[in-house]
Amino acid sequence: IRLYYLLFALLFLFLLPVPGNSSIISGLQKYYCKIRSSQCALIGCLPKEEQIGRCSLRGRKCCRKKK
View 1 (cartoon, rainbow, N blue to C red):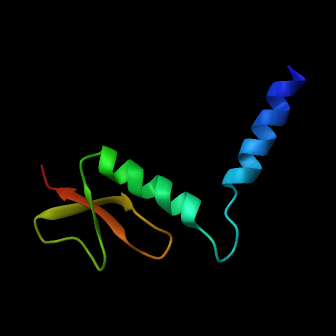
View 2 (cartoon, one colour):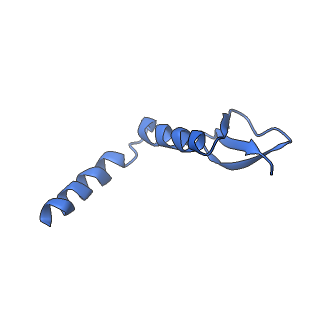
View 3 (cartoon, one colour):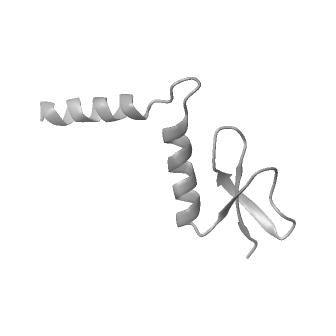
């Protein structure tokens, strides 16, 4: 059981964002956006799209077509 606590702590520290290097978090956010059959927009979503999340910490938006 203590092994699970150790593995959880290591996983948490590995995914903890480091200032100036957010490639792990951004990669996960982009992957999550793609799974939801959406696309990442640099500035903003098109008028016929809605924002459903973010693709990066710098402001890219995850957009999909409105239902």
